Image 1 (spheres, helix red, strand yellow):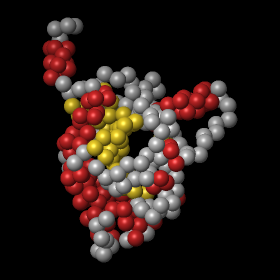
Image 2 (tube, helix red, strand yellow):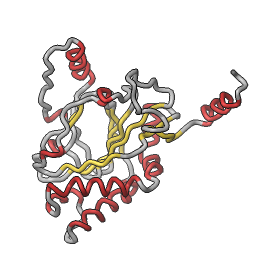
Image 3 (cartoon, helix red, strand yellow):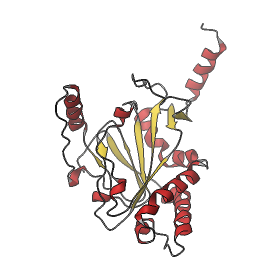
Image 4 (cartoon, one colour):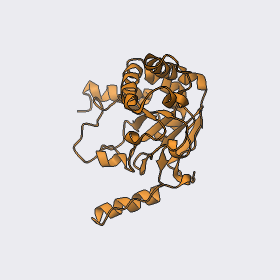
Length: 245
């Protein structure tokens, strides 16, 4: 993968994702009791038309527990390094399951900023299986992403290049990725023999500017508190006291 300062891999203790994997395994076993427990083999036990039902049920289960504490244990240090000590987190964590040759799971190249997300945010991409080549996600660097943005502004014909091997994230279990999702990213048909299962959730500084586009992606709806420093908590109490009005 080409070095990109807007994306960085970090290592973590695999035991910290045990609970996430356990939930998904149970949901697969409800469909097929013969499931061997290896998430990268899901495609051997369920059909393509069952994968979205599986994803939705596992998504609901994961979001019904206190998953934010698990994410803190996994990624807080890296998030503070990139965004500072005052963090908001997306209200729901997302789950992706991409089985081999499943064309229903394709996500074309896009920037999250196109759907009113702030360009100041960071996305945590947490694979629960080894992710490589076409079963992974591709991310274009900031230079190419900005080139495409300028094409849009000029209203010229929009042509987005096909991703090359170097554009795909090569990441193994025990690693997660932080990247700016304003950079163009997406996936293609998984031509490997392994299913990719991953979680993703967005973060931003509580002080990050909001998108100028009218949107519901704000604190209290789309985002909730994740980690707020004592200094900022105190400053908020001062403002709430009414003394400075």
